[in-house]
Amino acid sequence: MLIFKWGKNKVEQNKKQRKIERECLDLIFESARSVYPKEFGGLLRVDDSKRIINEVVLLPGTISGDSHAIFKMYMRPIDFSLVGTVHSHPSYSFYPSGADIQFFQKFGKVHIITANPFNDSSWGAFDYNGKKLDIEVI
Ligand SMILES: [Zn+2]
Image: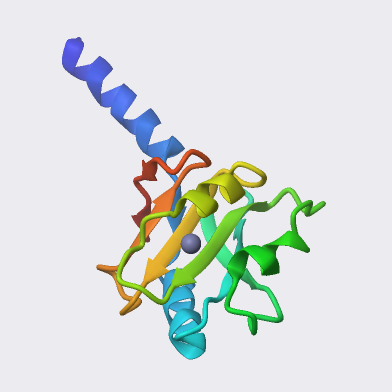
């Protein structure tokens, strides 16, 4: 009985866990590499289940190298499938800066940062407080 209950909870937890599609994550890495050493910025879109991130909306004008300036224009999206942001760090740290966290608190539930060299070992997802989120790649 206890085992059954534990198993059920585990399934529910997995159902709630956010996921990202492999292709989507690869697009993030490619975009970050293509603008390096500048930063790129984008918005994350989820599918109908609201759990699987399957699209990156790339923001034009990634010229200034300041992702916060780029995002300012897109602060109030009317599209509720947009759940968060993604940006790149030219450095080797994918952890959010103080300015990043201030920015996260204005919009979105999930924020992905990828750092140099922009691959599976150099990215992280964070909530609006900068707490690391566990996101499964599918
Ligand atoms: Zn940042």
